[in-house]
Image (cartoon, rainbow, N blue to C red):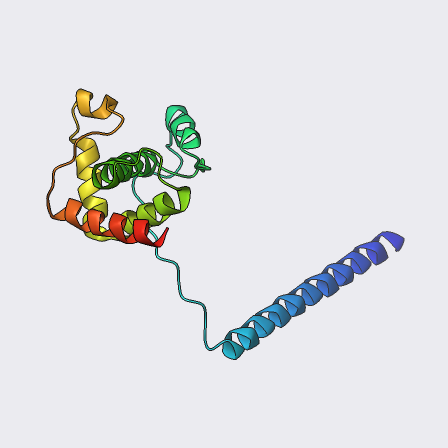
Length: 166
């Protein structure tokens, strides 16, 4: 009889715990909704780039390169996503160098340009293709010469805008 009582007590305890946990979650959701209404609606959603490749396929070399470029890579990133970020950093640094002559742009300028390129569908696709089609000489250059086309003009305008605000 005491064993059955112990099991019964555990079931009741678990039920109370789950009920209290659910009530706490509902209370947090209600408070969050009230805060959003007080601030004039839900916060705007962050723009982000769509996922590429198979998650979790990032290479050790890519992790090392990303860390060298002041990124905190995730093991959940794909090889293609990591390469796109690395190519975008190379592209934007080359664009900054070509437009301003600066070899070490401020990190906030780089972050804003990175976000600008990766959240624009046309630019993201352009840089992805640019990265795939670079030859060995371009890939090893610190500041490869970029084609002055429509994509570059768009990035150039963003560089000048960022540079004037910095």
